[in-house]
Length: 100
Image (cartoon, rainbow, N blue to C red):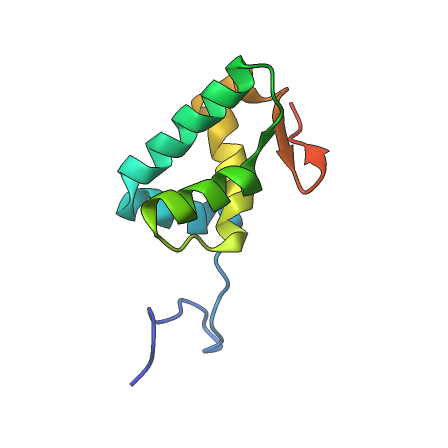
């Protein structure tokens, strides 16, 4: 038996999910949590604060007692900007702002 989905790679090696793929899987499984995270980002940006995707992920982990893969957090930052382009100038990721 194997753990997890079978790989699509022809050489039999497991392929790694990108941050965007990991975040998309999280959203598909926990849409209510993802939208709550978006609401938190909007509230923080509306208050004039910088928005840390990592800090919001930590908040969601504690608030909802749910695991969020660290790799997915980079996908989360990009998803925030896709959902609400006005957040682009406020979002921080790994010490850098997401490119506009």
